[in-house]
Amino acid sequence: MRKLVMLTIVFLMLSGVSLATWEDAAVRGLVPYWQAAEDWYTFLVFVNGSESDYELIYVRFCDRQGNFCSSVFADMFSIRPSEQLLICSKEGIGYPMLLTASCGYIKFRLENGAPIQVYALIYNELTSTGSDVPVFNQEHGF
Image 1: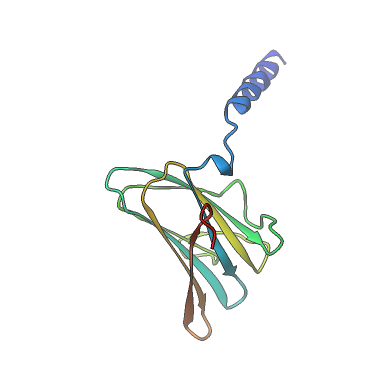
Image 2: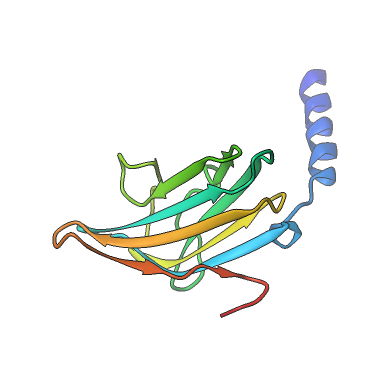
């Protein structure tokens, strides 16, 4: 019982220190539209343009009302220098995101502010056509 109490106190102290929020990120971005249905899926590609800086990327898929529809526990990705990261709304391609909605928008943040290029593509598997989606810095708006 004493170990449990001590562990609880340690976790409470750590949670008080780690009060970082989305607003504390060096870069916050927005993809205004994503779609994931039977034949539709969305690719989200992050490319690290730095040759020496690692970056932590947090990605949240939101539905049209702004509710999170992806896991908030599996939303953190690390990207090494000169590497790319592929996140997809379909299983079996890149890092899959399990979603509870069929469309909405994407919020992401970069923890350190490394030079990351972000690309978004919505693809229709039935017709083999796609459409790119603009990506915005949330500080500057549309």
